[in-house]
Image 1 (tube, rainbow, N blue to C red):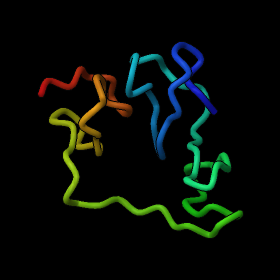
Image 2 (image 1 turned 45 degrees about the horizontal axis):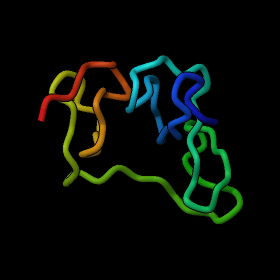
Image 3 (image 1 turned 60 degrees about the vertical axis):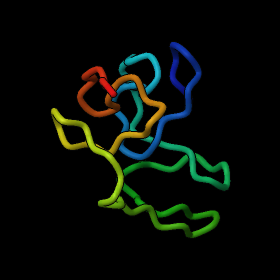
Length: 83
């Protein structure tokens, strides 16, 4: 699944696009092997990669969701990320 607004690929659990803040309709993400995976599953059935959060990554100050340095908006709550 890609963002319907900008084409960005969402990560696990994204509710809002991390690039343009558009609301995403499906709760899926793309595994590193290229397969679309439901966030409820947590494991890719093609490559068996398990998806786990890493506590060392930065988090949104509003909802505590994991964020990437390149993100402009939180994928969970939609709050703008200010570096």
